[in-house]
View 1 (cartoon, helix red, strand yellow):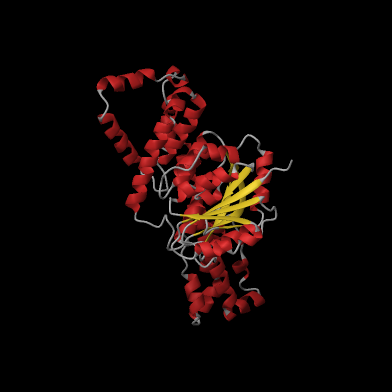
View 2 (cartoon, helix red, strand yellow; view 1 turned 90 degrees about the horizontal axis):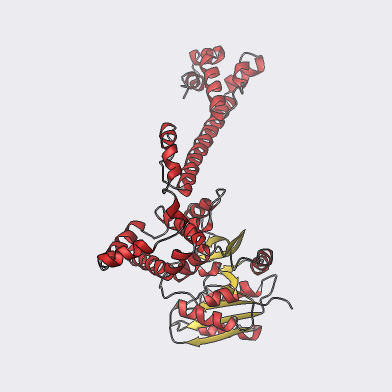
Length: 426
């Protein structure tokens, strides 16, 4: 029997966008078996827009406002009754045509995984692609670049950046999604779910752009930092509490948790890891000494058999002497630093290539130099010596400084020849 797929859409005050969202689902190359929408007490004419899609098979419900997390959970409960997979689509986002087909294919290829997410692109309120230099575009580029490095664990990657970004980017086995409902958070109800899935090693990334995430003035996430930071801190405390028993008993789960927590110190999302430690200190202050001693005494596991970070003690000298990454910075931090160095190096190379192109253009634009080349008096200016762009640029600048033809041209009044003869090597 073919696997059944449902797409669920929570809608709130998105009359302008929800039609596009639904059209993107109806245009899928692999048609979903069910499309369910609940309007969460919209004050605009969202319900009217939704009702116009009922004749095309969309199941529409409407009720009073209960919040996005409750609406998603309600939709999942309905879809899970007869569907094997559920994709979530926020009412202001859009799917690309192959999303369902390719997520379903990935699920078939990875039967041990429960959650499937893809790359995305950012669109504006009018549905146009955001420029690459727009702040949100740059953020997503940076977030996805972090995970492009070889050997990055998803729990580590997700701790540093919520690159999955949105519940729209969740396509999951219905049983897993139903068993792990969204939590009561205003801004980040997806992050607890995703972080848990990462620690359980249940996330599979489909490395293709298969959805469009819309950024506009009425996004829930568009807020001042304080409410979001506080909600992230509360989420972390909730996360620790929820997983406390498994952290105590499951060494593999703990290992992923370590990578996750370590990477949060370099988070580019809204998590302030230092304030999380302050919050933990407040909790410790409410615990008496006997309880603290009991907590420490109950900790067991293979970590107790060796000194922590033993390997680092033998590499401290080598790291310091080579000017490398400080010991304890973590594998992801090291890869990020190396990536920054690569970006800086590539930027310098691009600037050098541009300078070389400008110099060659100056040579080609001068009638005096063209005459010298035709007469054979300026052959040295055709040089392309050197392996790197900088070596080639230095070689050509040197040829300009030493060219007798340019020297003659400078004496007879050529401004270009005079400027080229004065080039410095960098």
